[in-house]
Amino acid sequence: MTFFEQCITIALCILASVLTRALPFLFLTGNKPAPPLVRYLGNVLPAAVFGMLVVYCLKDTSFLRADHGLPELIGIAVTAILHIRLRQMLISMAGGTIVYMLLVQLIFPH
Image (cartoon, rainbow, N blue to C red):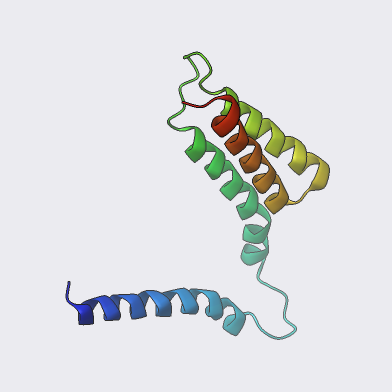
């Protein structure tokens, strides 16, 4: 790919990213309430994304070998406990990730 083609590709990616973030604000302005579908998606998508992250993180985990799966299960448990107690998705995800990383780096190194 030439330098010019790389610049065009980057510009198109920037344009697509900005448009997908700006269009909802252009179409859903004013004092009108959001359409029911948009409200529904706003309610269900965070949980769906959380579920997809769990499935993606566990897809290659082997639970049948020695300690494999234990750090993952502990990380998921910490994430679930934090989320049930605090109801803050970012804190839950960060807490579970930090616990998991500490476990695999310090306690269960490969």
